[in-house]
Length: 375
Image (cartoon, rainbow, N blue to C red; front, side, top):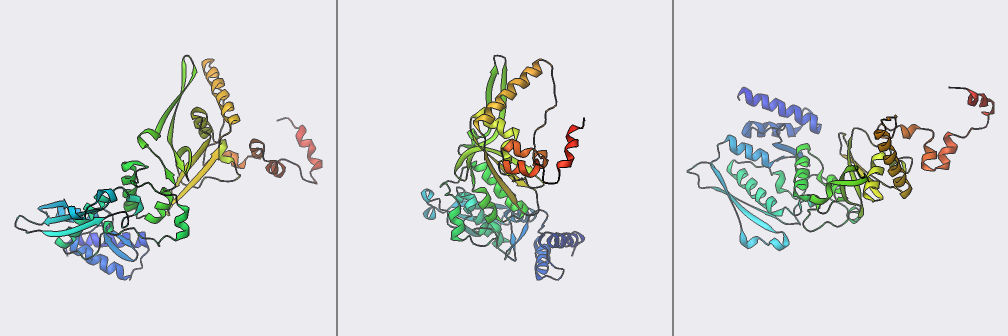
């Protein structure tokens, strides 16, 4: 065994134990060593994944193996008699030629909505082609383990009927987020070894129709003959079937969800609601943690808030034109002073919070002299 192979074996073993918590004597480490020595697969490069207590090779890993082995070529063509585009059903034949003299190793791959993950609905043709290439490459180089792309869904327990009823129906072509968004999501799932069933439950909640029009929406509003207010809204779409403004956020800690109505105090969301006239606003918060976590926060911005914000904009422009720059605070998640402010009950109109934080309790009558202090 060469030094480079020994080094790769050590690296794969270390990464496997760190990523999937395998014990030092786990049998999967022995099979990992065998695959590393035979095919030079690298976990850090994404060549192998551990799913459901078994190793799976990725399409990228197979292509890298073919490149290292100086594969002469791959020929792929559809099998017309098994293709039905109207039903999103496709089948491909792939032939791998390891050398000029090679007669070819043949592999077939099929895909339809029933045997692919809902995350890739609308891309069945590409999935079928990838599966055919993967099978042909595995035959050509004697790889006995299955590839990730050949299985219908990634690791995860089957979804119960109760859970499936909670998910809204998905459009036939699956392109609410656009093909680029869908492909990027699939790439992230493979790259970070995420539970695709769990990500599907997250991703299917948010839908954006006509993404070229409703993503990164530029909205302008005339303030005066010489001034225009410009805002860029992340998206206008649907959250749980409800049309709303959508704002993407990334954070290292969860956004506070209590007290109820706190999100309506976010000046950015109030601004977007004011300039667009859409009262329903939502935040999709991606929490950077070891396990996938996404928060869906929703609120309604009132007409009174929009009018107050419009007045604030006009006053701010007037102060800018008058060279008056006064400090003005506002909440920003997740560092949010409003969540610890004793006066938040007044802002939200919550008498229970006012009574809990601002009203004196029995026994505090002798502290009235504090109100007479001059600060």
